[in-house]
Image 1 (tube, rainbow, N blue to C red):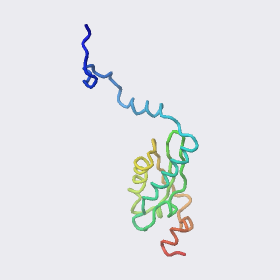
Image 2 (cartoon, helix red, strand yellow; image 1 turned 135 degrees about the vertical axis):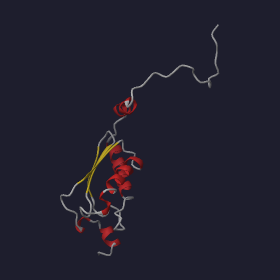
Image 3 (cartoon, rainbow, N blue to C red; image 1 turned 30 degrees about the vertical axis):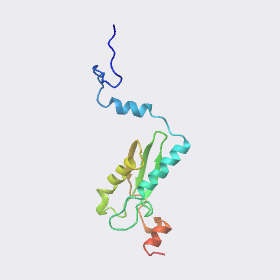
Image 4 (cartoon, helix red, strand yellow; image 1 turned 90 degrees about the vertical axis):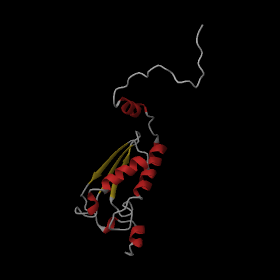
Length: 139
C-alpha cells in the first residue's frame, strides 16, 4: 500500500544540481521578447529613472540637463545609455554612471544595462531642455 503525505509536507527528495550561473543565463534566453509597445514602455521607465539622477553641482536632473545623448532599448530588455558629464573633471565622474546603471536595473527593471560615458560632442548649455534653463534662470 502506498504511503500518502499531506500536500503541504515538504519533499524529502533533493533537488537536481544546477551549474552556477545556469539559472540566470537560461532565464535570459527563455525570457519573452518585448514587442514595440513593451520597448516603448521600458524606454519611458528608463527616462523616468534618469530624471531621478542629479549632477551634484547643478540642481537639475541629468536628463533635462542634456547629459543623456542616446538611449537604446532592445526587445530583450537590454538598455544602453550614452551619457556625458558637464566636464571631464566633474566630481561625479566616478559615481554618476554607476548610479545611472543601478537605477536602470532597480527602477526601470532592465535586464541588462550598459552605461557608456562619451565626451564627443562636448556638453554645453545648448543641450539643456527649456525646463532646465527656466529652472536655472537662463531664460
